[in-house]
Image 1 (cartoon, rainbow, N blue to C red):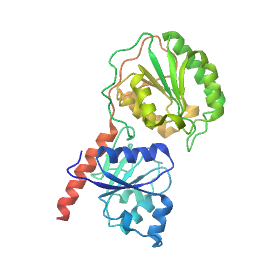
Image 2 (cartoon, rainbow, N blue to C red; image 1 turned 90 degrees about the vertical axis):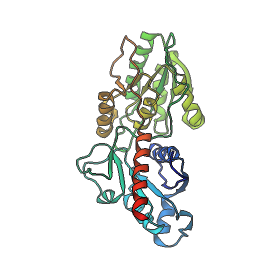
Image 3 (tube, helix red, strand yellow; image 1 turned 45 degrees about the vertical axis):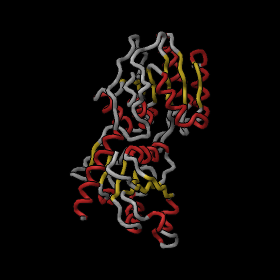
Image 4 (tube, helix red, strand yellow; image 1 turned 90 degrees about the horizontal axis):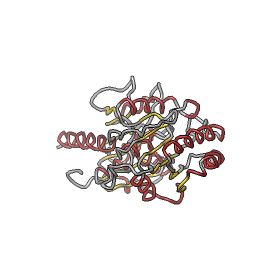
Length: 314
């Protein structure tokens, strides 16, 4: 989707959503990708590792997750000063000043961010694209998908007790529609919480697909084959991956199991027509949502800035 083969240097992250955002944008741009671990990046900066494999790249992408805003800039200085991009899923109230030094900052609304180098987006980029297999009609009974996140960096409220209450709510919903769930978890889903929830939903569970075994193809099949998608609001990545289908999407927004930053984004998703809040069972089938594609939005902005940068460098 770019004028020529781009080369992108990607700072690794242990957080699935963060690394998938960087990979998803790079894939959308059709780039050749080089991934560098944080430890290797530090060695390059210190001069104890060869920088050659990381030179001659057009773009360096880092972001939130680990505290690497300074690391990314220092690495860029050591490998030829590629255009630097900072992808933020959430941001604290007080920003690290180093973030403001990036060539492009992609983030949710923030009082300290403005100007041509800031792209304010709704949701987070990811690796999924709109699928031609997306169904336009609803089965009878509807096929339900349940995407489970879990505890996050700043919230550990996805307890077995919470999971049981959520399970009761989902069970009542399935009974109202006579539907069954295909369920998948994430690396953040606590084992005991998953057990508690699945026990309650055992009679309405069509299939369980463990995240460690399914891979991206299995996850894509869940999105493709479902009629209605339920997602826990602690995972902005899962919510946005579901929203790209345009299918009815119901998202939990329970304060006890949600960071305030996630809750703010979920409310913005709902206000813009990309999701429905799931706080109690509903009788009527929900409407499809507006397709959300933050990956494309970020890719287009990077292409625009990179073109302008090259014109200046000529």
